[in-house]
Image (cartoon, rainbow, N blue to C red; front, side, top):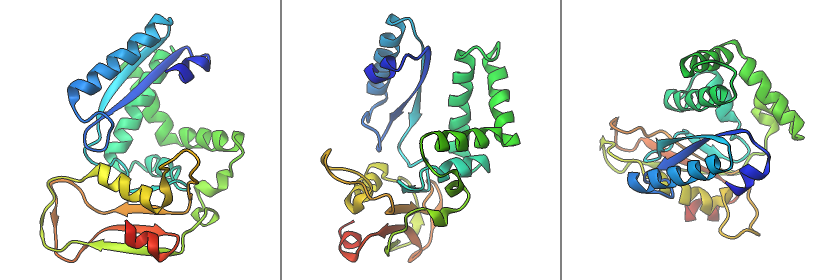
Length: 223
């Protein structure tokens, strides 16, 4: 909160995660954290709202530093639906706190309109350019760094998917270079993890569950 407040904000919408892949594993802890952060903001005369959202499964179907913005391109095409729904709700609440609309329902409709007409995607490209990035890479993924190796994980048997370990996916992604163990570690923007699994879905034996794109074979084996 200190960094956000130091930026001189007027309003803030927080997405507090809870579940297997989040710091807060229990609903009660996530609620306490959300209430604390909202309280801090309001004591500083800021308009703050917090949503507590599920992290028991990964919101994205892939994870790669260089292609995080690819998720924005997917949202512009309204997929995946759960991520799109969450993004629209967060945007709508920010629009409402910014006094662009008179009601939250109006803000939701405005957010949907900007997504559908492409203006939200256009604005994101402007943000990328303003920070020194190449907005063309949003439409041409070949301009992004690419890894050299890949390891696919297949299902040893058939059955139904009851749980997806979001934290385990994060740990494995960290092992191939997508995260840091120490602050001085270097993040490799080319490595990636992608997964096909969805909760409550039937899965066949020997079908690919996940794939890890790595720099070198040793990291692929370690994950």
